[in-house]
Length: 144
Image 1 (cartoon, rainbow, N blue to C red):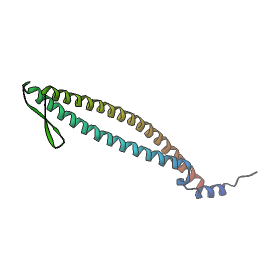
Image 2 (tube, helix red, strand yellow; image 1 turned 60 degrees about the horizontal axis):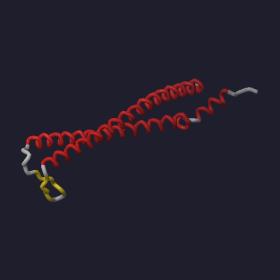
Image 3 (cartoon, rainbow, N blue to C red; image 1 turned 120 degrees about the vertical axis):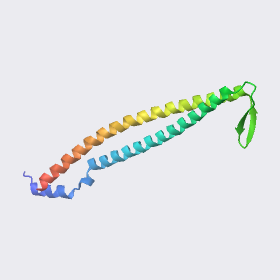
Image 4 (cartoon, rainbow, N blue to C red; image 1 turned 180 degrees about the vertical axis):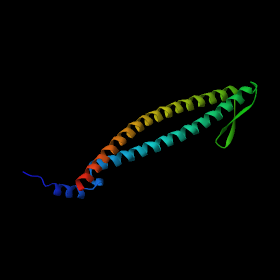
């Protein structure tokens, strides 16, 4: 039984690189990588907003600490202002700051997990690129 190398080369010409399973897996990995990058950017944006809110609440807490215990404090509740005790206002702001800190920790963990996945994807994509380059070189050699 004899192989005809000219026929094999002609067949490999017809099988374009894009039609190979490896190329399709490669493009899927690249798309997954892009999605993870976008997710990271969204998480970082959310973290920035939370940091801003936390800083605003920290400033508010400093201002509340400067007030005398008999000071009159109002809290906005919808379209109206409601009178509240100073200690209640301090407690509310502290609670908000704790919640925001917890949310920031959550987002930091999510970002760290995504970054780990991104490193894995980068490695996998690099390996796939090398294999595809080898496949291209082999195809070019067969076509000569």
